[in-house]
Length: 251
Ligand code: 13P
Image (cartoon, rainbow, N blue to C red; front, side):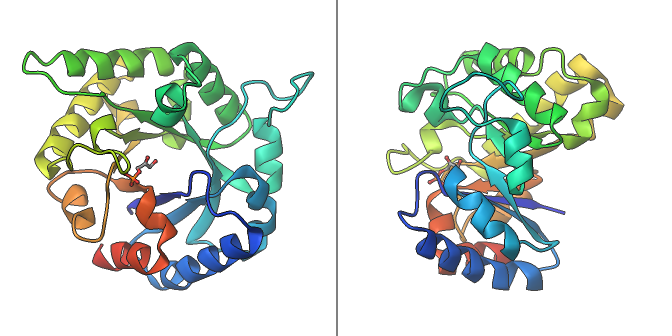
């Protein structure tokens, strides 16, 4: 069943707006038998939205710290996220890797991912290249990200892992263009190959591979069919309930 993830990023400004948005999405989510929805709001809203969750719509966070507890001023642990109602967590989003110059390294992302699994959260690991090149160097880049970010992850944990392929050149308002479903498919196959080499074929098949980057109601279905993605990670359009619900309906 496709996993449709709403990444609200640093929006909306108030809890009232967040509740309103969540409830509008929920209406369609619970009617839609063809997908499971995960809403990732800013940390502060997770606990308050928890009471509105249902089997078809749950909550995730956009980031996490890599230790379970301790003297880490300002950080939020995976255990606290689970306790507040989150069941998923986005790890290694490109905006944290580079865009807002947080410079999160693969080593840090790897620690966050393993700590999340330990706390019972399902990590959504984002990978993707900033640009493509004829020589195919971008494939080495994605492979390297996967190898570093998943180092030391146990095979038995792969059933709880989601990998989001988000080519940076397709994300947000600055996107150069949208990815073709065929381009998505190519990388889904490539990611499977890298995972199979790392963990074996059986373990690889447990991982859900999804697509993100300028997803809207016109292209959502194509990424899931031609593109072979098992879900979608939606940014801007997840803040427009009508449009997001059109995405759900199109599946
Ligand atoms: P957009 O859908 O706004 O391009 O954002 C994608 C994204 O970054 C989701 O995590």
